Length: 193
Image (cartoon, rainbow, N blue to C red; front, side, top):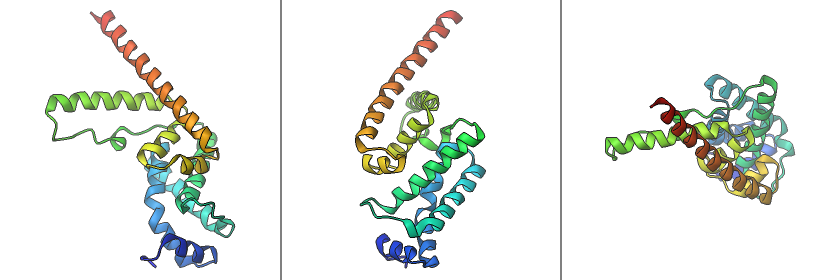
């Protein structure tokens, strides 16, 4: 079954084949875990929530409808809802861990460039953390997972046009946050001297 295309494995899983669902789990568990981990920033919570996603997917696989998107979009949609419920229930704010988003050490760069790159990445991640959870989700799906706007729309329960608009507004907000942070740094350095 490992060599079978997703659509064949999915058809068998929908028909009740537990081994086929196990194969889907094997193919997608790491991607779903990674998405959730970026949203909750805790390994234990990410593991628990990933298990919930696959439990819900297994329980409802017989209702799955092919809408022309990959099966992963269905799983991301479940994961999005599970994480949203987790945040609502726990009253926690999502955080993106620094060490996972970008590789901050590029040994091909001279040390002074590595320092500048690391400072830039840290500033960007700090700004990302200040965004609402929905916008963090959009950026994770777009840049970490490399999903298309159509896939993101399916996952987030919005139209593709709404995702494009949200993406544009998110980038504008991110740019504004970065400028505010830079202004704060300059003000702090002036007051310190």
